[in-house]
Image: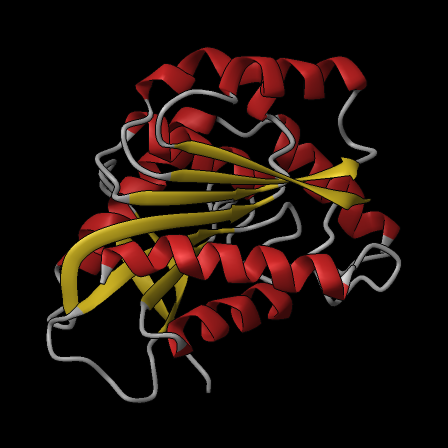
Length: 235
């Protein structure tokens, strides 16, 4: 299954690219919309594959280019030093408020599609995991999933604003988070209504099959199963 690149109208008067994937069986106005938020290396082939996989389960999935204000169309390669330096530069300068606005614009675009049932979920990985968490706290979305969000600890105080089901997938050996960051997330979010935190005996980016050194199929498949269980509430 292959999707296509489309343009999403931005509230600030411009537009940005996004990957759109639809289920092969189509839909008749009964498909939930999913906004999938990228890792720092962009809308990579792996991310498109994840969008296709979720779309195949009966969803309309849009994966926006979050770095369009810095470098439209940027896609980096794992292990490429220059690509990593560029990606880190974009990440350090990312305005998360604007990134959440991009998610809102994607949600509007999905709702305007004839096959969409009006329900919206957000799924994000790494940097995108933080964006998904913030979308759950700030936007009227219906579900959200955050995979190893690297900046969630900076926004724990917004957990009380989450009113939709939110799942966080976190690796106990995630090298991108300090122990105090992890403690802050657990102490601040566990026990809040609507929020579930799942811990896995693995490290960062464990769902990314394009990075063998980090990928853990066992944990990735378990997280995917839980993700689909949550998103299934939107049908």
